[in-house]
Amino acid sequence: MDTWTNNFPYRRVAVTGGAGFLGRYVVGRLKDVPGVEVFVPRSRDYNLVEGADVGRMLDDSRPDLVIHMAAVVGGIGHNQKNPGRFLYENLMMGTQLIEQSRVRGVKKFLALGTVCAYPKFTPVPFREDDLWNGYPEETNAPYGLAKKMMLAQVQAYREQYDFNGIFLLPSNLYGPGDNFDLETSHVIPALIRKCVAARREGAPSIEAWGTGDVSREFLYVEDCADGILRAAASYDEPLPVNLGNGREVFINALVETIARLTGFEGEIRWQPARPNGQPKRQLDTTRAREKFGFVARTSLEEGLRKTIDWYEKQG
Image 1 (cartoon, rainbow, N blue to C red):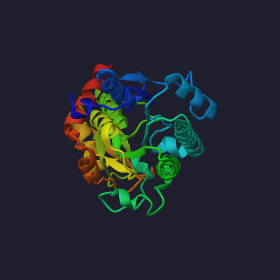
Image 2: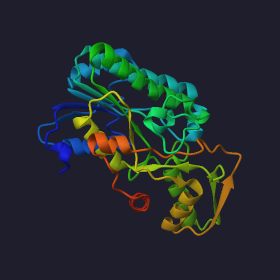
Image 3: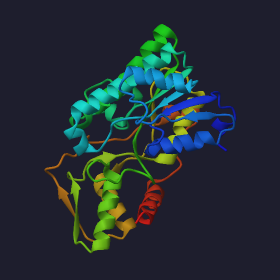
């Protein structure tokens, strides 16, 4: 068992988004810790955009710790179609949950942010101190700004109310159980689905958004869950913390790797009229390593193999 499980200081934990892609891994790990009770609010029972439902959820669960991962989220195209919804619903969920947790005396609040909160032209590798030095990339700015406001709120609440809130910034996630819907998915599951479908159907080519000459950093979902729970157990400071593996990959190289691993041998047709998104993304992960001993363990190729294997088995 991981070291954070030995002396986990919280007995009752509410995990918003706990039935989602990342949430299932976090909840599964928490349930292995003796004496810990986990509450996962479902959208059919609680609308976390509404303050009254947030208060009722907290009264029902009575948590010592809240891990807030619920989000309205999607890839570049979905962000472009829903900027108002993404801003409003993510902003209101975070604001209401932090305030109602403070009012009810929750001992700790962990807010999960997003790499989309960083300015468009942040120097690589992204350091947490650069978070406010510019405006986010336009296609996902509303989502990124809504999430970043949780950082401002937990820092203000720490100063005024001595409220223990922390803020984490994970890089792009992927892994088994990801969203493979081409309308709403992120780049890795979308490319896996396209390559597998093309191989099965004998199609001569697939289409990929943009030009391929932008970079991203990808974090395997199990590694991210480990980082979140390490921080939940022992990190109690106001500074935001990146969660990543510190390795950058260009999208054209990513596509080639996924094609190779899925057995697709056709042509990659780039669509330069489609948006690339942020030019470069790579995180400085020094603070996570120094503050709570987090180091990502899964290489991109290993993680892609596991994800592709899972997807292929779904039929």
